[in-house]
Length: 495
Image (tube, rainbow, N blue to C red):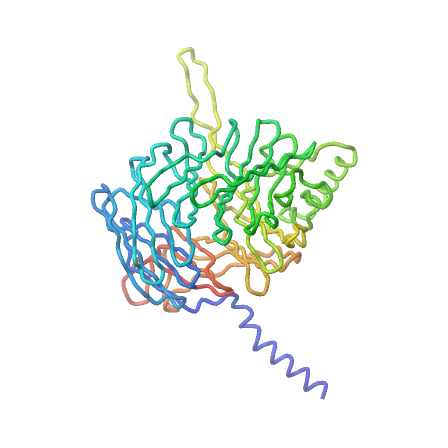
């Protein structure tokens, strides 16, 4: 009897192992006949489990262009398609979604000219408005509240960030009170339609210390209130993400530093109703985190922790220095998840320059931003740290300081981090504090098994809905007995 049960167990494991070994499923795929040379594409996840694909086709001289929107359901079946008329030199900048609408902003070669498109998810109905935004020459971020636009842009005179309010009913444009000081900037912008408010988080610095301020505006751009969050004596608050909710429940989750404001020493949480972050239980140094240093080899991690503990014991400042790019907060049933990418600038030496006196100089120029790892921290609703985890990143570089990793929470509470690498998706599934150093690879599947992917260009991945992500990009594919084809693909990936 025991032998029989043992044999049944072995058979069950053998049958189950191929299923487990397959990893995430790719149940559906769509291929769109887009020309790589003349087509720009954006894939946007919508809250009704569908996808919006924006694409523009035109010539290289920007004298002709068409602007198209197509909606696909969760099975990647087309639901509707429409076009919008815009100047031929228009280019996509940002989008904001608040059901049942997605709002998109487009720029032009003239840096004061912008087109805003309002798209109804259900019907495909499009509305557009053109604005000449005289004060700015770039848009970094924008939110929408009651059809009014809140835009973070770059002041064309002094290149500092500013906050604009656009009233779409009166077409009035106004500068909102926001940033002060030479080294101050925006940390977060969050529209909260349930409470009729837009919150702007400002990071204010004089170069030596830094504090945070939260300014709240109503839909008309009227300033409702300001909250100042002061630093502790030896800690400066650098950046933070804000939660939705009424003013008594809103929290900040962010990073702090010490002497050098370019670097992060740890994380903090605080309600915005306070004036000073509480020392007890609100600051979490990187040494307190279980997995932050797991991107290092075990001996390196041990040496780092031992050295830094000795410095702290002797009253010295931490020696470790990290730069962090914060992701938007993920709201969970029991709290929040804060994710960040850890990076450092890469430099290259410029060409040697000889002067008329035969002297020379060799400078350093920033070439990109290399990632060492990504981290995720789970908090409860009161801001208490519950767990942390890390995802070591290999050879991940961006030439602009933008997100390179997509982060999503699965319905069972696990967290997925993923990024594209040519014909693969590199991903990591986090189960709270349980660290796994293995880098997991998923090959992108084509329509047929005997097809070969010859090249992948501009690959991307976004979280979609439930346990699904969407991977996409241009591919050149060679079937076994046919000529090659170049397509824009979208694969649904179910974790």
